[in-house]
Image (cartoon, rainbow, N blue to C red; front, side):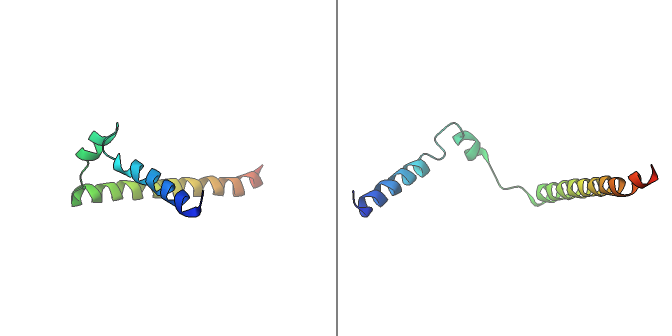
Length: 73
């Protein structure tokens, strides 16, 4: 096999996978998907930011306890 035939076969495999998007078991979900509204997007960003801040604060408290608490024993 030469390089051109190999490349053509590889491209055909990739194209056949992309042709089947939306026709398999997740096709109905993809058809129902929509862009979030501005309000939904803001709520998602707010909740995500709060979660990141809480996890960061928890990590900081644990680090602080591990660094300073053992000195008291």
